[in-house]
Length: 339
Image (cartoon, rainbow, N blue to C red; front, side, top):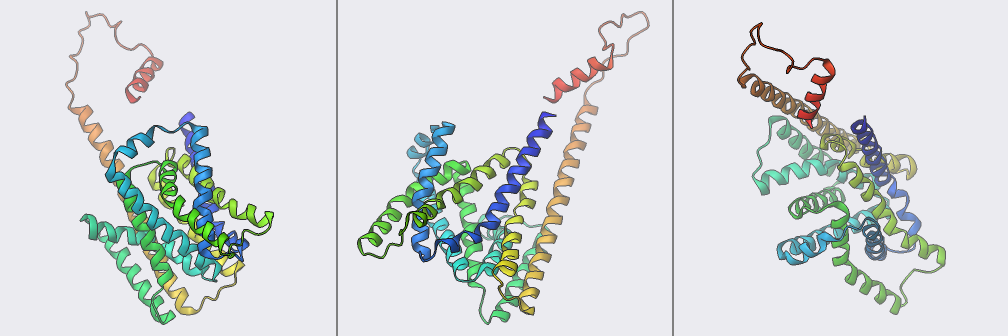
């Protein structure tokens, strides 16, 4: 019962995290007339403050000493900070310049880009269905490029920057909150210096207390979904998180059409249709592979049990008091073995 409750809590945390990420396009326009670079700088500065408060409340500091002593990890954190800065800044600019639908496409194709990078950079081998999904994704980009008259640069930038960020974070192997703290610590001084420059030159838009509060809340907008995601990641299977990740671009796509009233000509629908087809194939293949893996593990476990030597049968003269006498006792033994 406890495990079921934990999984339910994790699932709800994951849903809320991805829904919040999906609804964030409604937030960035509230920060106008601030430009994308100024909003990005505020996001970096305030995110560090809120993340440090969260770490203080959770008393999670032990990782800092280990990170500081590892130059390789520090270098990877710096790379991650640069890449996520490009991603954040590009996304804010896209939303505030009427490109929400194209931005959502970037996160739709991100899993396909991640798989392609695994093949090109890590030498991973793909299953036939994964090759089909990647090929369909490439076809989708070509269709969209023809429709736009140019490649969907915003989508590609967001997809490749976030895929690179994920690759680097995999090598760093830090928790979500700890990683964000380290990355924003790298971003802090350049971001603060830029904000001070804007203030000194009279170009800052911090303005009224209400607008200043909105800019400060960029830290909360960044930290809260990440904390919820971290709570989900330790409670639910990765296959479930993999399915939930599509909630964010679905919400962004819906907002682009229904809230921001962006155009969707036929060629754009065709391109998105191919992307969704590729993701359907990818998801089906992932679920099928996970099912096969579980079935194989169960079969190997059963074979291992069957291979164990059986205890000799007792003769009628032997006492049977040492054998389990009730189903409750047998269940207790099974539970102890499982734990």
